[in-house]
Length: 120
Image (cartoon, rainbow, N blue to C red; front, side, top):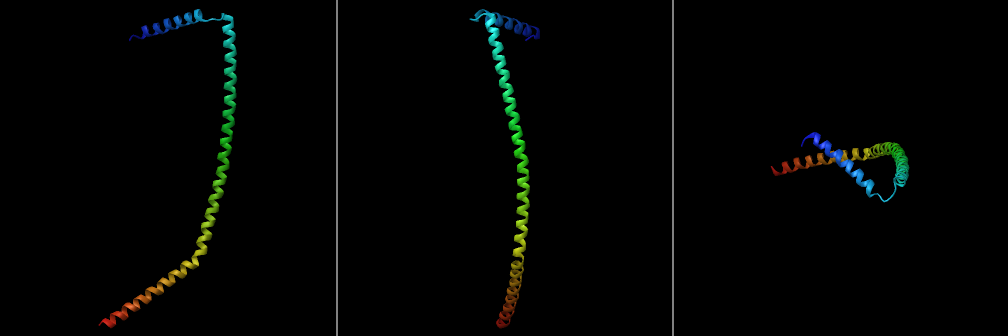
């Protein structure tokens, strides 16, 4: 398709649509312009309201993000402290268990040696 013929088609189509709209409009031009102005003002007011609401939502989201940062930081610190306390509280038990395991291993070695001597 040739670029010029496309442009001519768009221009002619727009002109035909405009003329047919004017001829098919049941209202006078003045009434139609008044309606268009009124509709334009309503749309502008709606856009302004939407913009204000969007800015309010943006501010609320920003505030929620900041609050959650501090909550997560506090929670992380609390968890770290709790884990350290837990590790410190089980440390004596771990040492005791390791000593008991070492004693059991020594006793098993003794038993194995005694059984080996009896078998000979």
